[in-house]
Length: 196
Figure 1 (cartoon, helix red, strand yellow):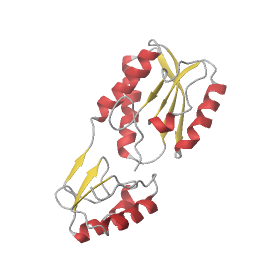
Figure 2 (spheres, one colour):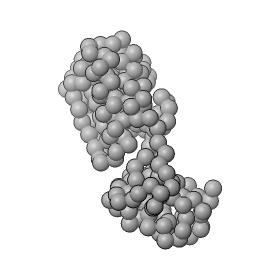
Figure 3 (tube, one colour):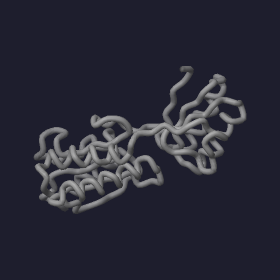
């Protein structure tokens, strides 16, 4: 491996990262399109240089497998959403009111996992009600959003947040640390951040 970068969901940063990495002449680049529209242009230097592109989760708009990229790697999003519903549902004993903080962007991978969580929660735990939903674009804003949810809904027993670092600080004060907050992300139930 010659480089590892992180764009922090910023398309301009991702474009700069691609330029920096391509100066190292890699044979293969594994990347996530922060923004599917701008990534088509941002990833063009990879194609121009003849490197192989492997996409994680979300392809750039207009890119076709076998042409612009070799393959897509991802997780089973339905299973990930179900696992998070079970974590939260079991922690709450199958009943109560919860909040829902989801990533407020067109990011297919996270959007699908979040929707799967909602679907499985409703199906498997009919006595758990999502009483408030909010979107977030900046993961550092979730703590304030969660605090407002808790103030508005004093019976709130848990909060779903799209991934772990965004969930930090979101547990209701009366809850055991980590128990009622389902933290979602790409690989495991410990749920690391999907940083790019």
